[in-house]
Every structure is written in structure tokens, then in C-alpha cells.
Length: 574
Image (tube, rainbow, N blue to C red; front, top):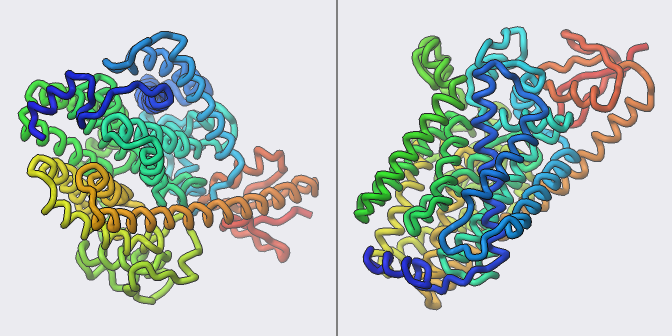
């Protein structure tokens, strides 16, 4: 399909794929709901950063006031050109759905405890400090604070948003709700795109949207403060918005595109080069298709939002690191940077000596397990695709090898075959568009040194999704149906196994921790505790009204006990 035909279809009563532009009320409600939620996070990120620079700390008002502002903003900017009958009454439904999603997400997050090592340590440490009015733009935490170096020098954009939620609710676990909120925003936006722009039927749009949103990285991190799934959701939103910008040129996807850049850049160090690749890919694609007017707009929005994300929201740590240590990526680069590879001990045996491509393929085709050199010298091996070992049913929140589930090796293999077939069977125009998607996605995976650890490259999940979509829309025969069908089933099984396992053991262990807290509370005794780096455990005792005394040394009582999945040692005072 050439550019002239695309433009003529856009101006007709059909979409860019030549399908009727029937306005579906449910689709519009979900699309606007996604816009509200993403805009809310973008505005909250910017507002909190501005207030911190003005020396106004995080308060309980940040979250509700910004949400009210996001509703007002969305009412004026979420309408698209083909939305008929736009009115305040029509906006009430997505506004109500957005509020319901916030409430549901907060309730789910509040009920489950975070059992992850990183989540209970530096993620919660930073969030608690912000909630207690620490301003990172004005001062560093002293080195007497556990993990102060991480809090002072690492990028923490998502945690800043989470701290406003904690300040609003007063419950430390509710900050995890941001992952569920972004999950729903991604699900709704994907459904809208697959229905309106890709032209799938409603059932197929829902199925593929669910497969896209239910990335196993999100499923096994859902009840933790890990942010890798957040980054994945933002990648998906950025890609969908970029495609919609290319196809329609509408204001709504342009705004989502801008907010996503603002949210991604300060989220994590590795998000900067990955986001840069996707942004450059859109700009280059617009040049290839000679969309010069749109090219100018995208460059302007990309530049402005990148500046906001890096210099305003990312003032601390990017600007402060650059000024004080010569690199925004300190302590990994710049004056006084820590020497050596920080992931050596956390890599499987033999991985540090291999190149990134070799490590990647070993991880794809190995068993799903949390194998690391610091705990075992066992070398990872290759398994037969689609084979299942009983040990792979044990789900952890930081799966290192085979991080997309036990059947992903087979799904990846069939996806590679499907890609090869598509490149031969697609028309030149469709082939070029597929390449414009796959090449930057692949580059964003291999730009980092450890692409085998799938929580660092969660966007790899989109590789199979994109190929399924192209097979569905552009190449329908028995061979393509078999290939895409196998990939469908493999991805769905990984989602079911990961989701069920994560839900089961998080529910079980959250019940156990509630029993522990209830026992301590009913005893009426004072607890002596060495919290170490697990600041969130202290907040659990405070929220339950349990009397305690901190100790900086080890608890040596004969009847000492630990909270489940925590290194915190406690015992009762006589």
C-alpha cells in the first residue's frame, strides 16, 4: 500500500487499512480511559518534579489533585477527529472507569505484600523517604542510611509517583498499584488500536491485547515494587502511539507519545538508550515515507518531552550526577564510578565470559529458573523447545533464565520461522513497515550488555505479538495459521502458568505474613528488631500498631524469628 493510498483512505469513511470507521462506544470509553490514566501519570510526574525543585515535598494532595487536573486535561484533548457526539455526558463514562481502576488497583496492591529483595529494600527506602518529606533535589541522604548510594544516584521516576500514592493512602503497599494502573491503560489502548487501526474483530482484538498486556515479567512482578513491567507498558504505549501518529497524525496519540517519553526517561538508566532507539525509529520512518510536516511535529514533541524527562523530571539524578561526577549515569560511569561488572555475581556460571548474543540464546532456550553464580556453580543448559520441567513451575519475582516462561523457547523459534516467511511473502510496502518495527525492537534489546535477563528487556515479548498481527492481517493461509497458532498457544500457556503460580504463592504468603503481624499485635509485647536494609518491614509494624524498638546490631535472642521472605530478625523483649 503506497502513501497516496493511505492518505486517501484516511480521508474517506474507512481507516488506514480500508476498514469501516464505525464508532464503537465501548472502544471509545476504553481509549479515553487509557488516555486519562497515562496523562494522569505524566502530569503527576511533571508536577511532582516541579514542586520538588521549588522545595515543596511530596504530600497527600499530589495524587488526588493531579487526577482531577488529568480529568480536565483529558476532556479537552482526548477527542479524535472521528469522535461524533462529544459531550461532557459522554466523558463521564471513561472518567468513572478511570476512577474505578484506580480504586481496584489500590485495593489489590494494599492486600498483597511485597516479598522481593529489591522491593523491600531500596525501592521502599526511597519511597518512604520521599513520603516523609525528603527532597532529593536539595540534599543527599547520609551514608548512614542503608543503600543511600542507590537512593542518591539512581534514577527513580516511577518511585516518585509511587511515593505520592503512599502519601495519599498512608499504606506502604499501595504504591505498587501503579503497575496495575499501567496494565489497564496498556490493555485498553492496545484493544482500541487493534480494533480501530489494525482492523481485528472484537474477540481477536481482546485476545491479542490481553497477550500483549500480560507480559510474564509483569505477572511475576505484579505484587512487588520492581519497575521493569512499568517500563514494558510504557514501551508498548510509546510504540502504539507512534504507529497511530504515523497512520492518523491525530493530537491524542501525539500527547500520549510525549507523556510516555517524559515517564520513560527518568524511570531507569537503561530506559534512555532504549527510548532513544524507538524515537529515532519513528523519525526515520517518517522520513522514509516522506511525511515531512508530521516529521517536524514529531521532532519538536520528541525534543521538548525529552528535555522535560531528562532535565526537569530527571534533574536528580541525571543533572546532579553530571555536575558532580561528570556523567548522568554515575555510579556506573564518571568520576569515582565503581569498577567491574556489577552483574557478575548475579549471572549464571560461565555467562560473564560470553558475548551478549550467546547469553541471550542460552537464556531463550534454557529452563525457566533463577540461576546465579553467587548461589550455585551449575551451568545453564539448553532444553528441547516446548519441554516442561516440574522445577519451572516455581515462579519467582526475578526470574533470570527463560524469563518469559517454560514454553517461550518454542514460541521464539516459531516466531523466527514466521518472520522469515513473512519477509518473503509480504508486499514490498508491508515488508518495509514490518522491518521498521522489528529492527528498532531488536536494537533496543541488544543495546544493553545483559539481554538474557528478560526483566531488563521486557519489550522482547512484542516480537511475537507483532508477527502474529502481521500474519493475521497480511498473510492468511494454512501455513501461517499453524505458525501463529502455535505461538498463540505457547504465549497463552506461559501467561497462565506464570499468572496462576504468582497469584497462588503471593496469596498464600500474604496470608502467612498477616498471621505473623496479628500474632505480634495480639501478644501486646514490644518487639526488638534489626531491620537492616528492609525499611518497609518497619512500616508494616507501624501500620499495625505493633510496639517495637530498633537495634542496629544483630538480634541474638534464642527465640528470634524473621518475617516471611525477609532478613529482618526480631524477638520479644522480656
